[in-house]
Length: 441
Image 1 (cartoon, rainbow, N blue to C red):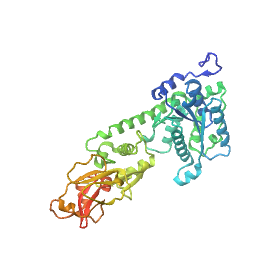
Image 2: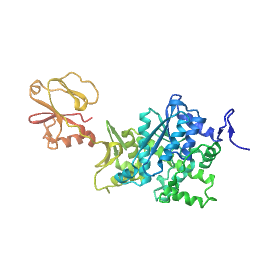
Image 3: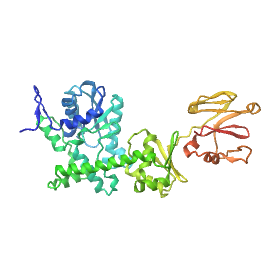
Image 4: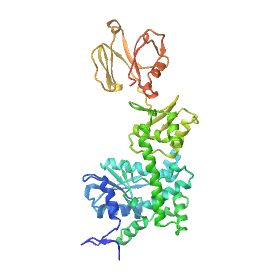
């Protein structure tokens, strides 16, 4: 008995795994959502496209087919031709990008595999934005996820790196992670969907191909049950890390949030997170970068560990999305390091400060409470002087309540401000020097 079923009036056979994939997609896709399907031209991605359109019913403008030419193989045009044909026969919009992966690999000091993954997702994100797609869908299978776990084990990575491919990351969905590769390709074959086999899949220079070749020799070991067990174990590790990350913000004495920066107490990081010291830092980075559930690479996680332990030659590291991590005293501070220079005359009343998107009010009238707006109440004889609002300098000193003058940098630290908030602070000054500190919030 054939487990698949033929749709009435249609020669296409629908798969036995339909309900698994439908349940997953229905959790995320709203009726009006547009979906970008990543199609390489291989069997798995052609199967994904056929499923989304022919079975799940994403039609017309709701489904866009995207293909990325990595600029590695001379016969890559065949992949594009198959992908284009599969989309056009279904009346779907086809988008493509060509990238020079070897150039990216050299520039970023990445392997060809890592560089291809980087340019692929960057290109898919660009095409999704261009075509107003809420979701990017890929054709990874359960076997891909299990192989990823084994590859991370083989690489000598610590146990917390043995995670499976996530079913969702940001707007990327992987609905076929509940489907065995054998199941998917069987369905593609019996329906006769044309695809192109990538010859580089046999290239033993690539780690994943080496692993697959080894597993072929161990068929009695690499059963469906074992594939599922390995993938589930990797998924469980991922879920555990997500749970720990989610609670990191509530650990006593760990986190201090200011506008545009987050400070983490290093002692609390080691006390509560032991060998997983990167977790609260990763959570803070994701919040500042606007990447909910975002994950840093293994290389950045190691850099964070070295920075926390004082092993890094510098007291700061640059993280993705323009976020900088700075170790100062007992805290690790994360924020954006750009410094906006301000230097403009001000007068009694309101003066716009466009560099900071706000206003300074000299007088007693309350100022609007929003970022970049400050009120300074001063005596009339002081208001008669020539006053400036400007970025503070390393040599600036100021008296507070008649006490001996202190450096502005020391006064900012005494206020409990982190390095990024200190960076944003401005001063109101006359010809003799600073009179007030503003804008360090």
